[in-house]
Image 1 (cartoon, rainbow, N blue to C red):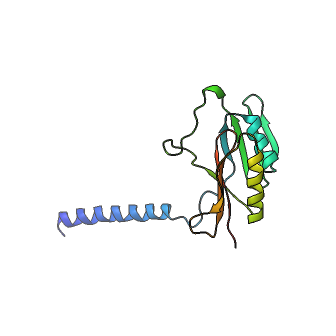
Image 2 (image 1 turned 45 degrees about the vertical axis):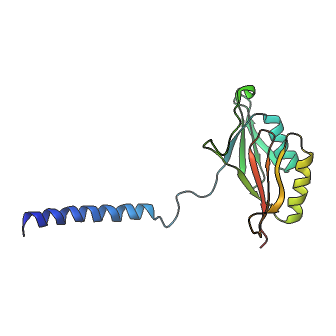
Length: 162
C-alpha cells in the first residue's frame, strides 16, 4: 500500500471515530436535566411581587433571606425565588425586544373559567399591567393572556383544552 492511502485511511478513521463519539454524546437517550428545579426572578419591589404571587395567584411563601432580600414562593409544582434588586430606583426595566434574558414566564391554567377569573383578579391588583386580556393564541384552541407583575416581569397564563 502506498503511504498516501495509509495516511488518508488513518485520518478518515480518526474523523469517523470522533464523529461517532460526538454523535453519541449529542444524542443521549435520557436528557441530563430533569425539568426546572426553580426559577429566579429579579424584582424591583419584593413586597408587591410577593403579594402578587401569594394573594393574586394563591401561592405560598416557603422561605427567603433577609441579608440578600428574597422570598421563595411555590404553587406546589413550581418554585420561584424572587430577588430584590439592590437599588430599586436605579433598576433598568427589561426590554424583551432588545435585552437578552427571560422574555416571559408562562403558567398553565386548568380551565377557561379560571383564566377569566384570574384576569378579573389582575385588573384589581395594584401594580399589575395587563398587556392583553384572554384571547386565542393564534388560531387556538389555546386561550391566553399576558401581564406584567408589579415589578415588571412578563407572565403569560394559558389554557389549552384537552
